[in-house]
Length: 87
Image (tube, rainbow, N blue to C red; front, side, top):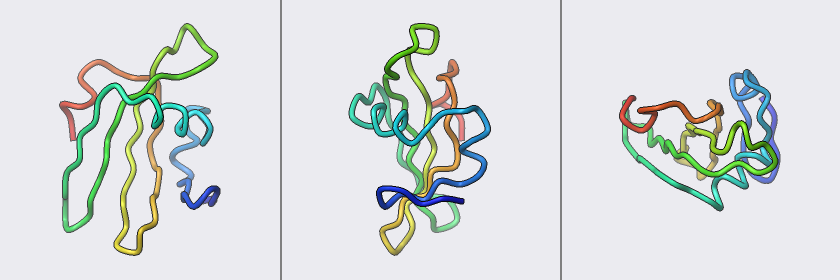
């Protein structure tokens, strides 16, 4: 797990080759969002635009907001149909 710009990047977030810069761009260009609480933890799922690759115009992100204000990103991938409908 790495930390950059106050955000923890879980090893699982590297699985598909996206970067923190991809996530930050998508967060500034959100197209859909869902916030939910599970087992006392707050999760945010969102989709957002991706720059620089017309074959992957948007990505999906799942992150956890910790009680101490830390954001842990643990999933980043090309946006899949129905992403915001699944938990």
